Amino acid sequence: MNEPLISIIIPVYNRATLIGETLESILSQTYANWECFVVDDGSTDKTELVVQNYCKKETRFHLLKRPENRLKGSAASRNYGYEKCKGDLIYWLDSDDLLLPNAFQSYIENFTSESDFVVARVQQTNLITGEYLEINKPESVNLIEDYFAGKTTFYVCGPMWKRSFLEQQTQLFDESLSILIDWDFNLRMLYKKPTIVFIKDVLVLYRQHEKSLKTNIINLNPEKVEIAFSIRKKHLQFIRENKVGGVKIFRKHLRNLYKQILRFSLVQNNKEMQFIYLQKVLIENAKLLALWDSLVIVFGFFVFKLTGKGYKLLK
Image (cartoon, rainbow, N blue to C red):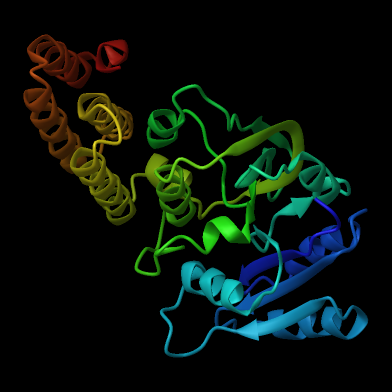
């Protein structure tokens, strides 16, 4: 591709202390043909002022405000930014993520005339300490199955998309969701069987913070956990109705996630959630006709309750 315009879309809410670092990482790009739309989701701190200062210094930055008639949240802000941008290539970035200087150049060099999007690897870092955590694994032989199961992931900042592919979709980000927004979006795009190019290099730093879904699940936030499962069940229904893959395989992944919450609830001695998720595991096993697994789980559950041991039986 020859010098295509990249549109960067960043939803932002109360990120006055962080958004500047993200915008600086865009300014540091070796590839220059880009425009950046920062969509303010109703910030009450000095985020707007910080972004305005960048807009004054660099005309490629643009500040938008999410219209009041759109639902609050990053999904609506991302969709609105997409509606306003003009790029041949679309790149969604979160307001605390950081790009490596060669990121856009590497994306461009890996696009072909056939590819619908290019995916780079993402390095997780701790937002507070800056400590390097894990690097994601975006590629897989069974991509939809492994993405559903969480064995592979893109995040929102991993892929760069061709506008021509996105224009064919009836829905981009689901504005009714409050969590798993990028997971839901990426998975729906995968159902369309796009042509994907994977880059093995890390091009983005994803900064993990205390409000992440992973943290909510580990800390057993009941509301967040239930919403997360309801979204997965919606996809399971779509998979079943549209024959995207073997339903039994995806149902096993759902059952295994229930097991994970069951283990967390036992370790944290959350008595209410222990029995709720024991029941959920057993219901899924009944659908899978997995009698032996149910017997092992029940045995392991009561052994752990009585002795504090037997954790491995719950895996």
